[in-house]
Image 1 (cartoon, helix red, strand yellow):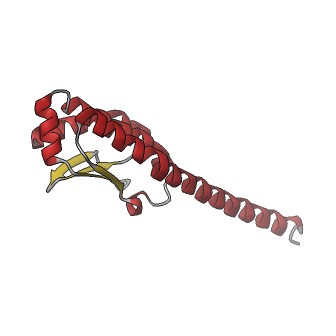
Image 2 (cartoon, helix red, strand yellow; image 1 turned 60 degrees about the vertical axis):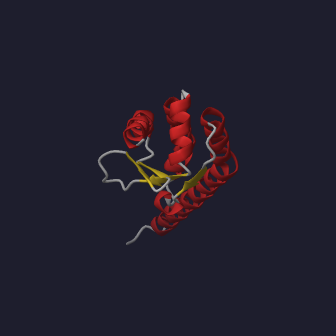
Image 3 (cartoon, one colour; image 1 turned 60 degrees about the horizontal axis):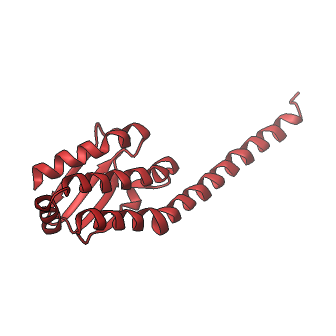
Length: 152
């Protein structure tokens, strides 16, 4: 005979999982709003202050999807980009090169199976492809600096 409490326990587990999915979705939405209203504008101001270049900063939201951790790490990614551009633009030669070559920055989250972060500068767009994990963002600034210096 089936335990009458078993279906109730199963239903409770399903509701708990669904509740966690809704909470994660809410947290992800919070991280997206924070990125839109705080993180990206602050990074643009920092880039403009350190390089005198006028840039736009965008996130490929489709690639970030519903990955709450990646969205929360976006603050660090944006700071690494700002720091890298500030490092390259530490003198007038670097500032001029950035102002001439970088008009738009796009942050793309790599698929989980991607090996390493990458940076591409093409037609005025600096595309920063990152796993947006804790480990990846710790290395990102060096990757960006190296790629930008090669491209400029």
